[in-house]
Length: 551
Image (cartoon, rainbow, N blue to C red):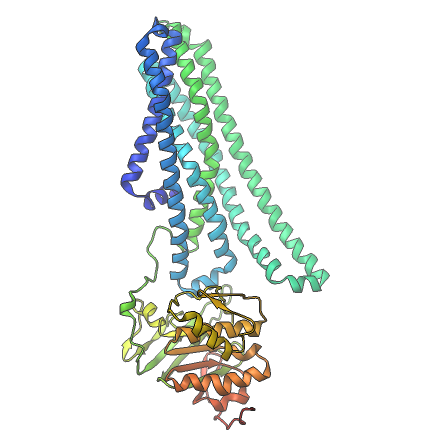
């Protein structure tokens, strides 16, 4: 099972070995207690043997302590593995190519981070009971072999028959778990629609009813596949239980006549052992659905391309290797990027693009919807690697080894930006004071406060939220800034502030400022206007004088 490889990978090897040893000891001590009870019931004089009584009394607390240690250490290993797994999966998502993440969709990633990881955590928490019960079963089988190898052989034959016949329905149950997991992606997509599209759904009854019909269909299919899988697992466990009692019946009614050399006391001991095995064996069988569900979750995550067993595609870099902020030239040479869309025969292609930038420039990127502006921005930012051509920073090519370091030159406000409540990565001692100054510049001082690097609220209009995003760009103080349709949600007054005051001030600081914009009346503010049409640079309009700002 892949689950056990996860436990092995995210656990310290010596601790894992010690934990396995504790589990084996727990199984052995349980069997030792069973041996003493058997001898007291079926042996001669053991019940009044002081040594046997002392051994039994001593083993009771020792067995409890060892079982506790085995359970706790396994539980701790599972909890630590789950914690590291959550962090590692988040790291791998952040390290995966953006185009891959966009193709997967947010809802699939959310299922991986919530439901899949939850399934793995549930299974890791069940692992201690699973392993200890296996240890008890193995120890009891050893005791059974010590009493009679013939009866051990018979028991093993039944166990093999049970394992083989159990495996067939289990595989069918796993397939249904996999179907359910695929449907879960669709259901989470509906949940996202319910939360993000609630206004649209409230406004149109027919749309709402159609949406709820689709959601109910996915929820019902998920329920049906889950119930079908559990029905199979329960039937398989019941079959295993039936086989066990068939074995007991054979031992009680048929074997004594075939093995007359075995005494009635021996059969009594064997019966006690088998009855004792029943509970841990049932626990092992009942634990399989949880373990198989976790295995399905791990395989699903790996199929998403976020393998938990491989290194991330892009490794984090040491800040010491970041390029100098006093860069001199940024050049795109013959850069192309193909935007593949599933079931679309003709992929959108950006380029080839040849552009150069220098510090202290204010450049507007313009064009109609779908013209390639945002795609170019993502290539320029290092979020999409070029399919052909290259990006040169001060004459050095940006490649897979330097791309993460290269991205540290930029501060960006995307059109679909996300606001973090905490000003992450900013730990200057005067952070709160500087933030308040910029909040005043952005006319948000009366709305938001910054205390210990945390924004007091995010409950603002879209335009005001964009100003908060701009606040982070000011605080990051990166040498290259990119704003994607930043002014689209601003009122006319602040739009003029942005174009007439904020952008020129940033340019005056020697920063390269790239602005994706449809506001053609402000094109005259730019040093250059680069226009795109279906992935190609076309003739750009000449900058015209802009009317003086009011006030």
